[in-house]
Image (cartoon, rainbow, N blue to C red; front, side, top):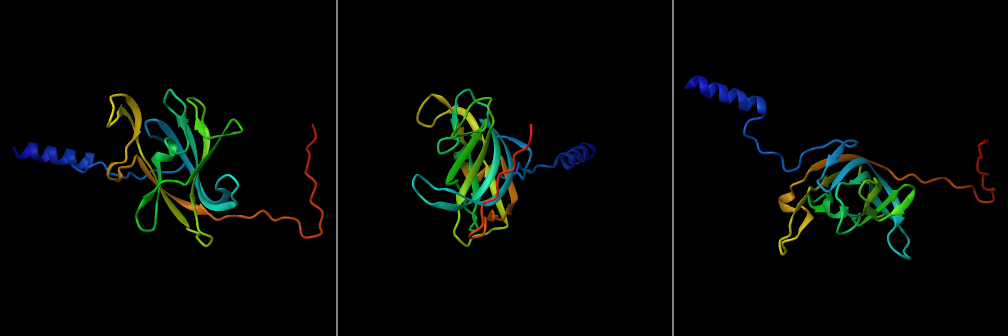
Length: 197
């Protein structure tokens, strides 16, 4: 009997014991992460400016760049109702918040959707104050499951939001905003360089 218990204890020690799967497993940027509906590869984070809406001035954002692939059979949105519902950032107070804006490009053209089989380079953005300059940003990615809705019998891709369970948690260094120096007052603008054939 003691021999059996010793074998069980040794197996549990090697396999990690009776620990639960972490609610927020730590992942590394640059590696693809399976979120069910999407495969996402988080690239980096930086401070930048972007248009906040039609007719508004450019604002400062924390921007996380990621490659997004749609694993479903239908077109999915990048913004609310799509990818943005499964991406969150951790605030100083420990609260997870959804992004304010999501922009994307596919095949060199701007897009607000992800087609099956056509990867999108997405910029997921959170608004910042004029003096905010964090050195690190923690991003969480939620899993999507193909299941029945709470109020209907149809099957749909539904993001999992319960109890802060995440498919992955990444802490990224934040690159500071860099301004492109312009020509000095009175100087002529430099001519573009044209390469030969």
